[in-house]
Length: 109
Image (cartoon, rainbow, N blue to C red; front, side):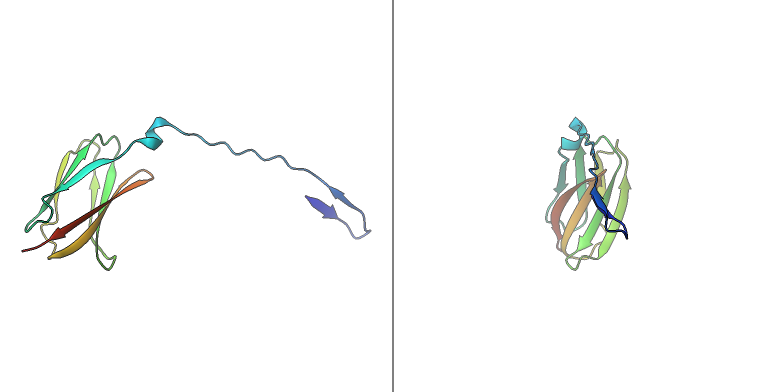
């Protein structure tokens, strides 16, 4: 860093900065999830394996609009959703902590 004053005197100063990063095995856990049946004419089942923390499912239509949102408990394994969705293509986002798994599925009559 360089400093100066109105007398024309200047000096240099060095600042030390430390950044601490913490990585754990949990940061690298893959989210194991399946959506079936795909495509569906009625509803979907979201099958979760090894979910250790609460999560959130966000379903978006092709325009990006949120059409369904659900909080999921860590002990839930099979979640039924989408029975109110009209036919079309959808993108599901499963959020756990800071990680997101994207899912694509469609509904047809």
